Image 1 (tube, rainbow, N blue to C red):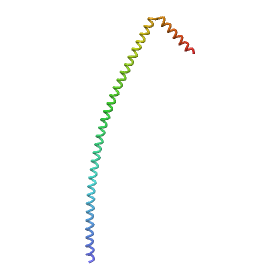
Image 2 (tube, rainbow, N blue to C red):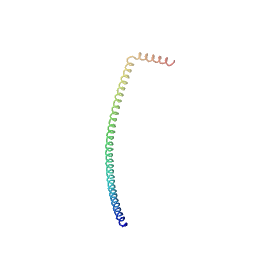
Image 3 (tube, rainbow, N blue to C red):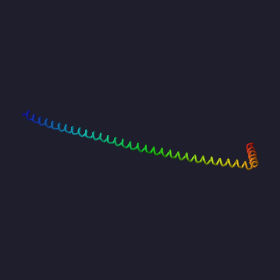
Image 4 (tube, one colour):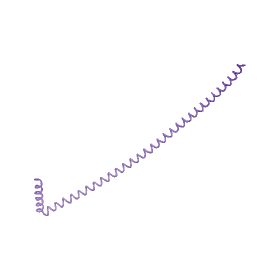
Length: 132
């Protein structure tokens, strides 16, 4: 009877262990499925994030291109304005030079002796200053 008592208990223990082993295996299978699902979600998230980053990078690149183009246009416009202003100043100086030259020629033509006296006085003054 001892064998029967222990064999029944052993059978129940084996069944219990087998049931628990199946339960653990089921839990492991569920965990594997959940881990696989999480991995898919993370991969999808990463792909979506990368896609979003690429989209933002393209938008920034386009904005930078537009800004660079605008800056180039403004620089060209400013340079053209500066060149035009320089040409105006040069034309004004040329006109003043021409007028001054004409006035000097007219003064020499109208008063040659006065002009010669002024030139001689300026020469003496310059010579006196340079001797010191």
